[in-house]
Length: 290
Length: 309
Image 1: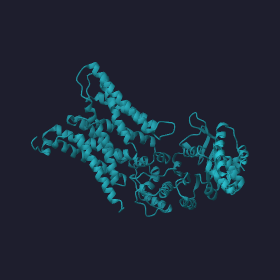
Image 2 (image 1 turned 180 degrees about the vertical axis):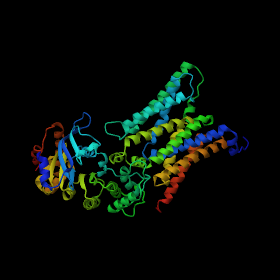
Image 3 (image 1 turned 45 degrees about the vertical axis):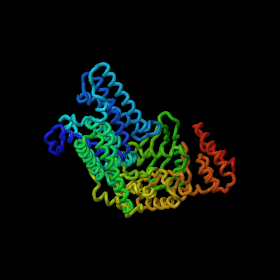
Image 4 (image 1 turned 30 degrees about the horizontal axis):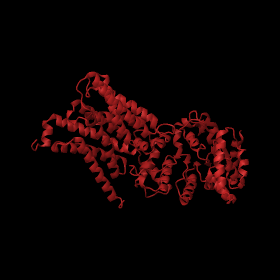
């Protein structure tokens, strides 16, 4: 490791280039949704979903004997588990209608029960199979250096879908984020919008967290969006800035991680946080003039 | 037809055509809960300004939601533009709605122009962005509500009163025939309130609007509204000219307004002495009374009302 050239290594070591591609794509997916997640006050939904995925992973590993985290079956079960949860949360919380459960409570319950179930299922499987299993850390922090070409293609497909959704439905999403009830009254199909947005959020969380881990997904769904919203006063610029910040933080973070030999997750989140501090300072400085 | 209907019809221009809104014996309850609205009949004709007052929990918001088609009546029919409210189709655009909370979060990524343009989204349909026509209409609406020059300001940076005007502009840009306002004066100071009423008066003429306003501000409504209805599960009509009179305030009182109104009424009737105790002792009692006797009509309460006087 004596002064390796990162950029040379990218081309020499496929594992490294795949990690970088996967990281950048996961960052793109999460960060491009981030401004809407933040504005719609769904930061906790993303976070809850990311953790709820753990319940799905546990269930998948328990149901499919001799399976590993990488198996498609486990991922399909995780996705189904999260979609079912998201649908339940979405149904409960669409308007925060009186008499139903508040959204944050619903997510809090789903999130903690899922984590508990996930841990329980993993333990049950361990007792049944008596075989070596990856520690829980892998699920929480992802396995960036263990990315398969398939992962990269799946993430690329997701990135295209997310970007298309944001471009095609930008005005509807803006109105929905502004005031869902008002959008409904004005004649927009808010129900369809609400569930599609949730669907994309869940897809992003489940697919990205496999690669970069739950914690990094939670961070990337919130911090780039908050940062971009400090800098931009319109939706499209905010989406672009947030996406760029996401991709840059992943690339830069992984570079630092490789050079300094520190955890990529730590590096990426701290870079995102530093960007947020800088953006806050910039917006404070700009305020008197504006 | 039914008496309440006729009262309202004779009180204003009876020559006008079909009602824009008609409630035909509408009752509503949430799930299996108690009745929130009980056999409400009303009709609002084109060009009218209806003020809707009533105690908290009296069903005002529910009534608005029924008009907006967000809820369906448990019994009866709500007709808007002659069609059932929940099945309006494209005519939904003709309904302008200004919600109670018009506050925009700081850092929300939209300018005043962006928010106003939202009013055009439904008519644009999917896959189309607002074009020149929509931008012109939005700028006109912004000008009409007196926010000219603030088009490019982030929406979250406006004051409360300005945000409310923006909400009105957003409703107006869709060229509605009917404007529904839910407690628009609640967040404003006295100056802001009278400005808002003056604005509505102006807009009503230039946009030829029918207006339904839910408000606590009975005095202001009595000056600007053509008709006043008090909703406390059942609906009571008051003619505007009648309202200022003592007798009607007693009727308003009879439909159990909250402590504020009770004080207000005493103030007007110059019973300053026992305002507070009467208001305090009476309001909750009336509420309680009403909640437990579903058939409690209009006639009983005034008797109680006279006691403190």
